[in-house]
Image (cartoon, rainbow, N blue to C red):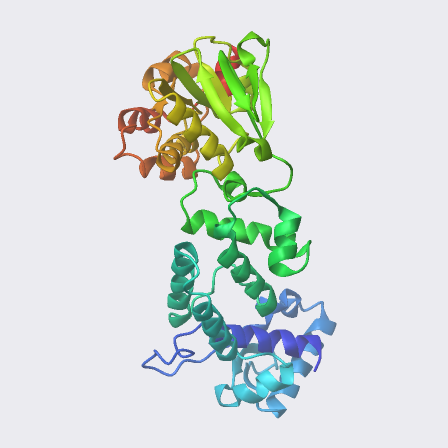
Amino acid sequence: MNRFEKEILNYLLDKYESSRSFIGDNQKNQSFSVKPEKLFPSYADSADYETYKNVSDAVSEMEKCKFVKAKRLKNGVITAVILCTENIPEIYSVLKRIPKKDINTELAELLNSFIGYNELLDRYCCDQLARLENNKKVQQFDGDIDAYKQLLTVLSAIMNIEKETYQRDFSAAVLHDSKAFEKIRNKVISILFSYGDFPEKETVLEELNIIRNPGHVYFKGSAEIEIGGQVLDIGGLSGDIGLSSSMLSDVDEITLNTDKVITIENLTTFNHFNDKSYFAVYLGGYHNQDRRSFIQKLYEMNPNAAYYHFGDIDAGGFYILLHLRRKTGVPFQPYKMDISTLKDNLLYTKKLTDNDRTRLGNLLDSEFKDTISFMLDNNCKLEQETLDEK
């Protein structure tokens, strides 16, 4: 079987497998056809005799096998190639193609076997089973069953990582191959962000304690921190200090000499921030369990301080603030994330994308509704770094 025959038959089978007839949900008999020039544009070019002959010969051979029927003009030009549905099983066999029904059955069994590990994976699996019932493509499945099983295996384990773990170590432990996770990394992130509770797609893995490099928490301001019996007075330092995530659990005491704490979303802004009345914390762009524990410990030891979060005035900034509150239980208030700041910096704002508008629209019932309405009406958002540069 040559490439012309394979291409025509595969195209016709794709049409059949996407139809209502395939799932037995059609009241009328359907036919599945294709014009040769759709697959081979030069077939309609009278100057390209070779393509014309190759396609014509291929269709004639398939007619002999009763795989297709053809409609022709009087001069022999083929106007349509029609699938012989009664011979589909034999066509699968000749093409060495696995029938979609068999693939769907295997997928359904696999998805059902992964229900019960965690709520996020349950939601994903149930959605995909519903898609299968409606003859829709399973999200993030590209035809490789083994790779898809690896994807589900990762999703079944990733919610249980309690300490920062290097990506390669996680991959070795779960998939028995230190490099296997990298191949499905983007698919894992897409599913986690779509079905989980994460403010930003870019930091999903880090929030779940899967990291590529060691993480740190940076802070500065007037405070004394006791670590392993040693006291660090950081109030006299000219800059910030950083602790690796592995050291955060060794923090015994945090004594603030100020009554205000602020977490800052972006590193550039953290570096520029010099208000001595605040104890400032940069969480490394995300807050996983180790970082949240540090924030909670800070709050427990200094419950009377006021807590603020300084982020971008965009959908991501608001989601990060809400997520930070929800995950730590600390009553963070927004800092310079309001209409007044936007109005003062309209010349430096950026226009909203379609995705921005969608995400902001989902927050219109929140406490930020007035600011968000202003953003939507004025087509604007503002990054923290802009304020640093003024």
